[in-house]
Image 1 (tube, rainbow, N blue to C red):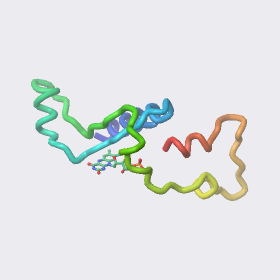
Image 2: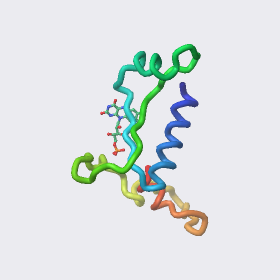
Image 3: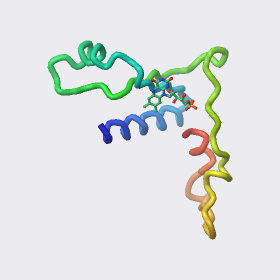
Image 4: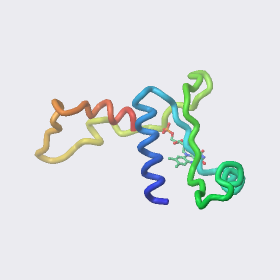
Length: 93
Ligand SMILES: Cc1cc2nc3c(=O)[nH]c(=O)nc-3n(C[C@H](O)[C@H](O)[C@H](O)COP(=O)(O)O)c2cc1C
């Protein structure tokens, strides 16, 4: 379960990095999904996730996030901006 959740999170991060919208949900009929998709296997659903381009008129706004400055404070440490763009990662997450 733990590994599956982590892999799902990676999928969400990758999809959002490509500009897609993601809607993860755990409040669904697990047994119904398992029966429809995984009948006769040992696979069980963990969460489901819609992926696509949401209509800006109807999607909820993102929940509040820490700013990059708030999230990246570390005494006496400077982020090496030549290696990646951490601001982009904060936006995605
Ligand atoms: C694994 C997982 C399961 C979730 N299940 C539900 C759910 O069942 N119902 C719900 O309203 N939100 C659920 N959420 C939260 C929303 O899908 C969404 O991530 C949250 O509202 C934050 O939105 P934002 O990332 O756009 O700010 C779940 C999130 C995750 C990561």
